[in-house]
Image 1 (tube, rainbow, N blue to C red):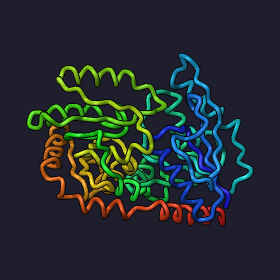
Image 2: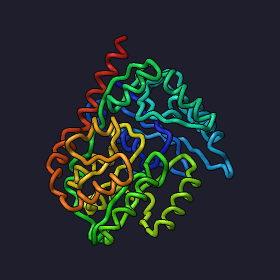
Image 3: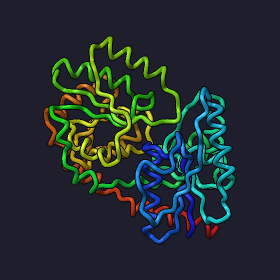
Length: 353
């Protein structure tokens, strides 16, 4: 089976991590897989090397100074559409709304439902749900949102997790002392302002604990939100450590060194970064959302607001062992091999139709 997986970026975002891991697992099952992506910022490859069994096609996408989000979205679709030839593939599977708009006949994974205000993004998001002939969701909660909002029935195929990569990671010795880690950068969907408020409350009883924020590569412009976040940090008198993107090989040792993994996202499809933390044996504190309750129930601590997040982080620091084994067992139950086999079953059914 010849499969094209399409992504909008080469950067280490959750959907891109998913795409690469799925591609390698599909290839291991005997499929002929090619991953296509736009090469933003001069990128000629992805943030990590792929198994040689997977072919990679990077479409150059030079930066345009002063370009707004809307025009950048439209140009992204046009550039990928012009470069991509679907003729050589049995299945074309898009992992985001941009790549789903670039191809006429496509399977689409909806990782989570977004709500945009930029007109071009609103239209992109809507078309990328309505036009695909088949849909995948990584959780039943998001599949329910598709059903209720658009009347679309999606196949639920959970993410895998690279369990051994995180379970076997030795803590990075450069990170001494206690700290809370959040991965995903500073942006509205990641609940960054709520995390900041929770951290300030946590420091009232645990002043030695640091907050470290990793990641943050994104297509969107969150400068206003970042400025509001920095202003609020100054008002609260806290100084989080903001790392920005972390190298692929450096991430597991960083996660393994942390004392609590904070995951206060307001929207998620599955929560891959938090699942990786569980694989490393790190306590996870997350937001009370249907999708996160579905995935992490019994293996993480939940809260609905900054005060609750602070309380749960405090409890995790005081008793890190209480959910460690359930967390490891949960993470070990998800594999990319299982995800790939489920995708192949779906693809075969679609081709038979």
